[in-house]
Length: 138
Image (cartoon, rainbow, N blue to C red):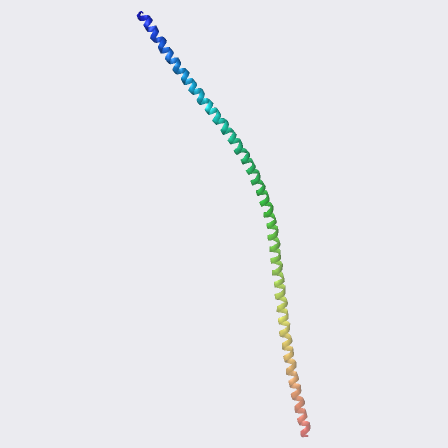
């Protein structure tokens, strides 16, 4: 064999090794891509599950928020009613206090009138007794 033939044989063997290496690399890359594809399919399924659960949770949250708003409105009405009852009780208390003061004032005036009447009665009795004594002495 000549030197050129030997060079061609070395080139052919080198080309065969390179071809084998490229085929093995491509097979490994193909297997890796297949594995990545399977993994992405699983991730996509999990993401869809998470998305549906998130939507369900969001609907429940919105429902609870609406219910809470409704109950808050009910409580606001109740608080207004309690406030009105408190105002009414305050008004009744003020009225009762006014009546109590009026009764106390009237009672005080009547007591004064009774005292004056008793004093006049005592004076009249004293005058009657003195008149009787004078009459008896005469």
